Amino acid sequence: MAISPQTFFDFNRLRVLIVGDVMLDRYLFGHSNRVSPEAPVPLVDVEKKEDRLGGAANVALNIKALGATPILCSVLGKDEEAEIFYRLMKEADINASGLVQSAERKTTTKTRVLVKNQQLLRFDAEDRHSLSTVEEKLFLEKITKILQQQKIDVLVFQDYNKGVLSLPIIRELLMLAIRLDIPTAVDPKKKNFFEYRCATLFKPNLKEVRDSLAWNDLKVSKKMLGEASQKITQKLSNKYTMITLSEKGIYVNTPNGDAIYPTQPRRIADVCGAGDTVISIAALGIALGLEMEDIATLSNFAGGQVCEKAGVVPVNKETLIAEYKKMYDVRNTM
Image 1: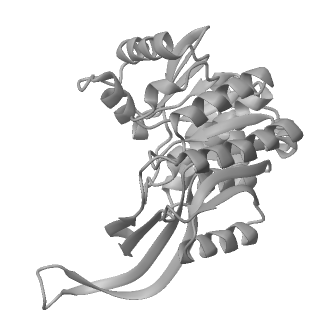
Image 2: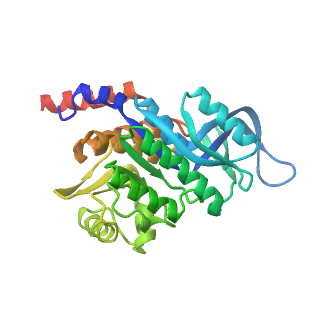
């Protein structure tokens, strides 16, 4: 067995600092069997409303679900949504010492309308401008203090292009992580794609790679993904590149070679949040020094698991262990 049962318990001793854009995921669940008399649109009778932690906060939920200790660092507004966010953080027992509030920003809120577990509509309330100089200084001081005073095993950058991860913050934290010998894992977006220089693990999805390299006809083949990964490494000097390929699996490039790891067949309900789950597994894996093959395998299982559920949800550790053990048992009988 490439990963021993002890590996899953080793997750429990890790402390993960997560820096990035957080959001409140709001769900309106209902049913629809008629059209609005006011316009040719479905009329939804709302039966339930639910608020969940989203964005980088969903990474924190995944890290906690896997047994490790997350410390979340981000910037919220001073609004009702922020109050709800803090309440959800407390209920989830997640460290909120790295959060900063600003009167100049609104708390990003994504509201999804679901009918029969299918998303009918989404509307967003958010700011995308970068942090002000004052906010940036306060935020950096808070994160730096945590990194210097606490034992952190891995630093995760979760970028959604909402302005929290500005260039000075990215560069300062990457340099500090290198000085403190802390591995880094990056889930990027297009705007800052090529700013995460010398990261340990760089994990874009296929669309982000196509957009950032201006390579629209990039296909899922080991040869083409290898060329794309090489271009990324030439610019970033990162150690590992992991490209998520949706239902086609995960491509991994390391100094020792590259490969595509396919997914298992799944009944997909919702792909939202799968990337958060994958970066969570990958971050814990590099913190423990696992082989990238094993990280990719676990990431496929975990990402596929959350896609079977409606809405953004964290991974279930016990299910993950059972699926990995089942795969190992099957391989051993072949």
